[in-house]
Image 1: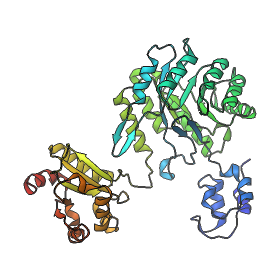
Image 2: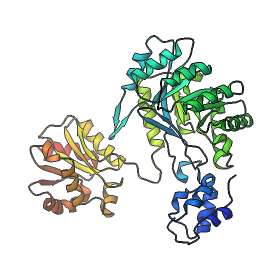
Image 3: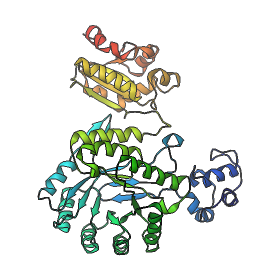
Image 4: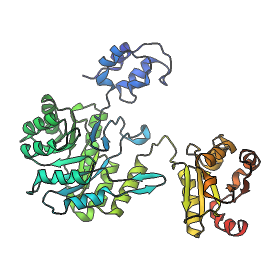
Length: 440
């Protein structure tokens, strides 16, 4: 049973050291009881108290990890809305294949090979769901595993089939779909034997809570919920209600991540359904269709939603190629604030002019903000030039500063001996004209 704030307070060191970010241990205890902070925020809590506080310290939504050659995590959430803190784990994006499909291995290999770079980050599909539909299920799982090392969801009702298939996945953590009131005992036994997570589904929240408690009593702790829903509105209502019950009402029996099958309402609605599930509040999203354009749109949406709201949106620092630059192309420098990056990159790319774009680590701030905060100065720019080996890519050592920080030109000449420091325009929209007139 969860402890009250006063009960938690009695187990804390009661030093009021303020290192947790709160003025008193009592304030921290109240936040911990409300699931708004984590126990790790107190640096002096004893090991004995940690054991007693385990339930109160555990996130309202259990962390579930599917693991093979890569990992997909869901759950571990403590807030209803991102602006309260942040969402921890992005929903896993899975592609469903049927056991009866003779081209199952090639389809999986094609989706497995998909990778697209988005501002320094590589986006890929997270895993695959194999559905037993009358074909050789165990053989299909074997074929899929030969084509990918990503985590799997096994969709079948036959415990013996699942047992055989999971035997092929030694030292992995898969997800079984799905247990209901008619088969939960047999599937729970299989899940426990292979240390797999088990999906649970029922017609109501009361029935769902009753079923998860029965499965937990059989020794299975890792569960995922299928909330059903006949349409987008019903799914949204149920997923929001489940999250509210877990986080606001501390209902542990429904405190698990959810899985959503985006193709259940037809292929024409799959993209919309998947987008809503990513936003509210699926832990695993299963697609019936794989196309690069659909995957890209959903992966970018997911990245935008799950970017920490308490941190500026930023791109990976590095040296970026625009329009296939060569050794004679200019080097432009900017910060890693995403809007700044896209403003510069889009203007240069649209002009058709080749250039190197050096993105420096300014903790996600824009040019002027970073300069004012001491996060974008000559020392940092010079460090980026050397760290990303810019000199090896060009024949003429020339770098163009943003016009707003022209004041840095003298300092940068001292930091980068032998380099020509030019001051560019203040606005990104003026870069193409500057590059054509001033650099030729």
